[in-house]
Amino acid sequence: MAIIDRKEIDARISALDAEISAMYKRMNREYEKVIPKTGKKRKEAFDKVMEISEKYTAMCQERAELVRTLDGQ
Image (tube, rainbow, N blue to C red; front, side, top):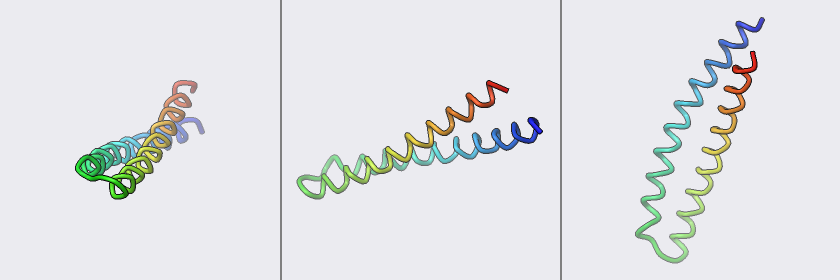
């Protein structure tokens, strides 16, 4: 049973790695859009970056938990 779980966890970690990489690139592209803006547009753009950042952080935390689970097996 543990072997199947380990394979599933490894697969999820790999999927998260790809998602995290894509999310990081997207966050950087969105942040570059913030720099030249001013006022309300800048706040809206920054809010979008923060939303992406929160998702990115959640994925990184999930990945860390999965890695800890694997280390415990």
